[in-house]
Image (cartoon, rainbow, N blue to C red; front, side, top):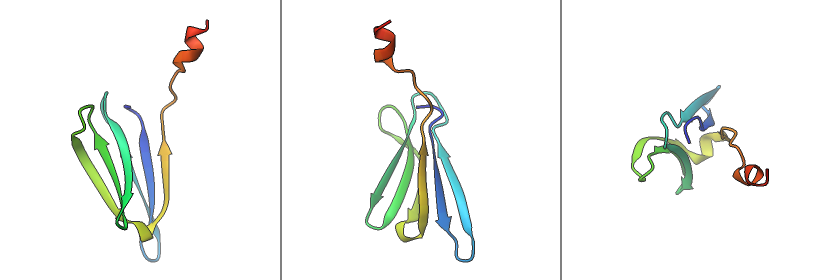
Length: 80
């Protein structure tokens, strides 16, 4: 959903670097995948098309933090 973002902290030798990937428009989401030693963070549209991708070597990633935007719980509203 628009506003969701992922923060990636990477070991860059003598320092660390922080990267951010965000869902920039309505209907887009951020997906995270780890496979074959690579962490891949992608911004994806509703129909599944990848808009942009960031790839990092898994052994260099120190932290991967997902920040979802707060959503209203639809079940709480139905009980009112």
